[in-house]
Length: 132
Image 1 (cartoon, helix red, strand yellow):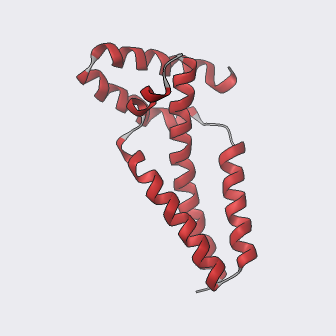
Image 2 (image 1 turned 60 degrees about the vertical axis):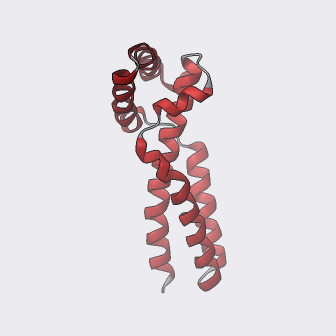
């Protein structure tokens, strides 16, 4: 396999992993702004987040395979850039909030009080963003 194919597959994995990471960061930020326990963040995470850890392992495995069979330096540089993007890029609320609001509606169907508190915290974060 060529290094280009490794890179394209890695970019696809990294973009999806970055999105999952940002959704989880949004949940943490909502809990902080709502002054809630971090354990409440589990109620904010959409059901597809359960795929985040396996996807991260697949991404790391792909990098290891790329480093083993292709270019070690390119694999490590791509991994570093992926990590840097996850750390530096701001959380785009317009991309991460819709699945969180859907999850809040599911929670609201089970526990209206918790759902209302989560929705209030999410709305507060949507208005103020991560500026706090």
